Image 1 (cartoon, rainbow, N blue to C red):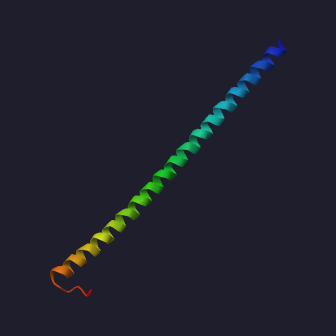
Image 2 (image 1 turned 120 degrees about the vertical axis):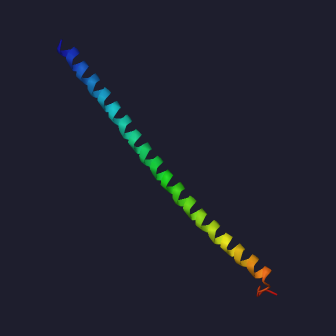
Image 3 (image 1 turned 90 degrees about the vertical axis):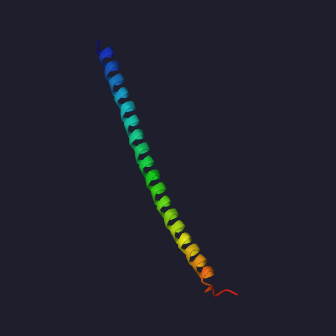
Length: 73
């Protein structure tokens, strides 16, 4: 009888430890996904800023060409 009770307790502890590890893994996965999302968001913002800068330069070049104020020979 004592032996069965001991086995039941060990089984319960083992089950809890597996469940706990699964929860920790899930939390770490969620944290990693959030970090990846933040990196993507930051990269998209930087790309957007560079596109705006490039468009501004193109606009200035077109304006210079149209008004013949281009200082390049």
